[in-house]
Image (cartoon, rainbow, N blue to C red):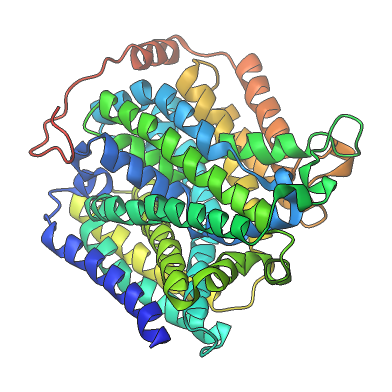
Amino acid sequence: MDLLSTYGSLAVFFGIVVVILQRSYVADRDFSDFTVAGRSFGGFYQAMAFLNTGLPGFMYLGAFGFIVRTGVLGIGISALLASIVMYLMADRVWTWGAKYDLRTQPDLMALRYDSRAVRVVSALLGILGLMPWMVLGMQALGAVFFALSLGHLSFSTSVVLGVAVMALRQIWTIRMGMRGIIISDLFQGIVAYFLGSALIIGLIAWLYSTGATLGQLPAEKFVLPGPDTAEPLLFFSLTFLPLLAFLCWPDLFIRLYTGSGVESVKRSSAYCGPIALLFLMSLAYLALLSSERADVAANPDAAWFALALAAGGAPVVALAGVTVFAASMGNIDATVQSIGAQMANDVIGPLRETSLSDRGLMITSQIVMTIVTLVAAVIACMPLPALFTIGLFAIQIMVQLAVPLYLGIFTRLGNKQGATGGMLAGVATVCALQTAWPLGIPWACGLTTGGVGLIVNLTVFLLAALFIPRTAAEHSRIESLFGAKPRAVEAGFIYGESQ
C-alpha cells in the first residue's frame, strides 16, 4: 500500500504532464518556432519556466545537503538577485532577439561581436557547463525513485528507473520544442515551488513541534569567512559568481526570447523574485533547523526525504518525491532543448560550407537531443563524486560567459578577439586549478577557480579592447545595434495574458 501511494503519486503527476503536452500540441512552423515558441508567452508562464529551469531538483538534494554541512555559508541568494538582472536585460535582449530573429544565446553573442568564432566558442562553453547539470538532474531522479521505493530498490536500480522515465519524457521535448517545455513548466513550477514551499513550511512547523530550534546549533553554523580568516572571499565567490552565472546558462537566457514583449519579460522577473524568496529562504531555514538531527547528518544529500519520512511516513515522502521530480523534469527538458538548439544553430550550422535550412536545423537539433539524452542517461547510471562538487565546477565554467555577455549587452566595450580569447583563457584557468582546489583557493583569498578565471578573462577582454582599434564600419554597426527599438511580434496567440 505504501508503494502504491509513493509511486502512484509520481505516475499521476507524470500522466497529467503528458495530457497537458498532448492537448497543447501545435506543429512548429520553423526553427525559430521550435526554439523560442513564436515569442508568444506571458509573464507568469515565463516566470514558471525561468524558475523550473534555474531551480532544479538539485536544490532539494545537493544544495540542501551543502547547507546542512556548512551552515549559512551554503545559502545561495543568486536566484533572488537574478530576477533583477533579468529585468535590466529585458529591453535589449528581447529587442535584439525579435529584430534579428535570435534563437539562442550564442546567436546574440555572434550578433554583438560579428564573429563566427565567438558563436562557436560560446556555444561549446555553454554545452560544457550544461552537461554536468543534466547528469545531476537525472541522478536526482534516481534519488527520488530510491526514496519512494522505501527500501525495496537499490540506489543503482533506482537511478536506472529514473533515467528511463526521464528519457521517455524527452519524446515530447524533442517533438514539441520550446512551446511544450514552457507549457508543461507552468504545471511543474506550481508543484515544485508552490506545493514545495508549502511542504517545506509544514516540515519546519513539525520540527518546532519536536523541540528543534536554531539556538541548538553550534556557533560555527552561523559564521561567514571574514577579512580576518584565511579565505575572506569564499562567501563572495559562492554568492556573486553564481549570480553572474545565472543568466549565462543558455537554457535560462533563452527564456528572455520567449516572451510576447519586453513587458512580459519584466513581469516575469517581478513574479520570480517573491516566489524564489519564499522557496529558497524556507528551504535554507529547514536545512539549518534540521542539521543536527541524526537522520539528516547521516546523509545530508538525502535529508529532504529523511525529514518527510520522519514527519508523515509514505504519504509525505510521496509529496516530497513529486516536488523534486517536478523541479528536475523542467530543468532537464530545458537543458536537452538548449543543447540541441545550440549544436544545430551555433556549432554544426556555422561550420558547414552551406547553411542548413529550417527543416535541416530542426532535424539536426532533434538528433542531437536524442544523442545527448542517451549519453547523459548512461553517465548518470555510473557512480559519481559529490553532487555539489560537480555542480560547482559547472558554474565555474559557465561564468566565463559573463564577461562578453554582460559587457556586450550593457556597454559598447569589446571586440571579437577579446571575447573569444577571454573565454578560452578563463576556461583554461578553471580547468588547470579545479582539481587541486575544488572550492576556495587559499592563495587567492578564497576565490573559487571561476573567480580567478574571470579575472584572467576580463583582463584579456579589456586588453584586446584597448589595443585593437575598432574600424569605422564596426563603430557604425555597434551604434546601429544599440539604437534598435522594441517592436511588436506577430503572434497568433499569446499564452497567459493579452498584450
